[in-house]
Image 1 (cartoon, rainbow, N blue to C red):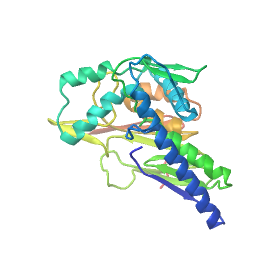
Image 2: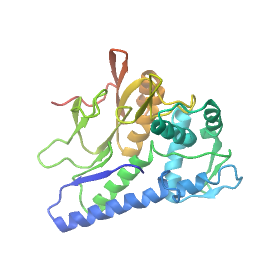
Image 3: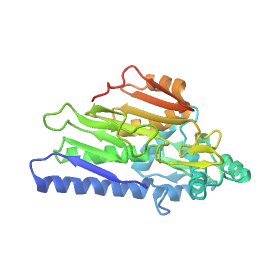
Image 4: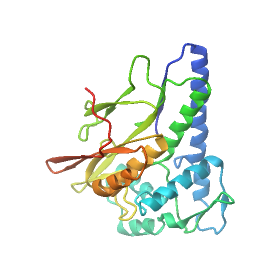
Length: 303
């Protein structure tokens, strides 16, 4: 999925721990073959290749689960979260490499192939159909969270409950480490990719994800564009922001962090308020001013 996974766990038996970790990593690798848009042979890529073909495609249980969750969030956010954004994210990946703004004609072509309503799911047959030619699915805002959840499930089946899965900042935790109230998680600062965390919090039996443009962005003609793309405008977000979401599981935290980034603080916090157990911290920078927003239930900072 284009990133690293890290597992930290506690066990009294090293052999059992290594066996459980190996199986968890194998589960992540199997999901990569299903959900990655970087792999042209993945199930997701093969589905994208059928766009506009007029024939529904049968889905594996994993791909069906993730697509169904994605579509529900797309409906709830009026398309602010949209896994059909693939043509746009592919275009902006090229822009980050070339540091050149995408041609308007290419931008228009990509936008025409984007729209969650162009993805039709049939719950009875568990099939998906991409209705418009040149569509491309990108699960970058949800797949890593699902894979992290699945890795933690594997560890629990092996009797290992004190564990943390970190999928490049998409974090899900089981029981707390010994003699601790939780896993101490640092939240990256808005402005410094190599700076110390801006704050810490304790996390157990839940998940946390941070989305923002600290690490992935491009500057073109004096403007800064995030790797997070607004599906409606077709452009990378230009307002600097860091969105941290906590939730009961990582697929929820991962997808909500992307959705809130696109929605902005007001609509984003309204969305969070309707998700049981979710909370959010939003830090935004415009010019020399930094503003922080958070839901009332966001965990307090620790020193």
